[in-house]
Image (cartoon, rainbow, N blue to C red; front, side):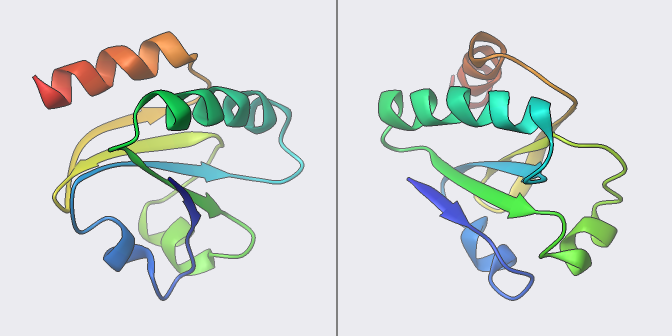
Amino acid sequence: MITYATDKNYDELVAEGVVLVDFFGVHCGPCKMLAKSLDELDDEFPFLNIVKVDTDKCPEQTEKFRINGIPDLYFYKDGKVLFHQPGMVDAEEIRSKLAEILY
């Protein structure tokens, strides 16, 4: 499921399960390409929660995580950050990281 975070609900959205957070910008070309991969992964992994954070609309979270470039991915499991991946990645790289987290 893909959910859009706000500064107020971010912590709640990453608290449980396997969560992939995508810090993005609406005018970012690489972010748009990554969005296609995330849609594909959303269909493939029904247990995966994908949280998208628009850096323009969520300044508190953007500052908290010191987001200097987008896209920027964070992989969570039960509220804990297990992996951080700055920059553009393809769906295969994300699958690989999910496999590490799950197995």
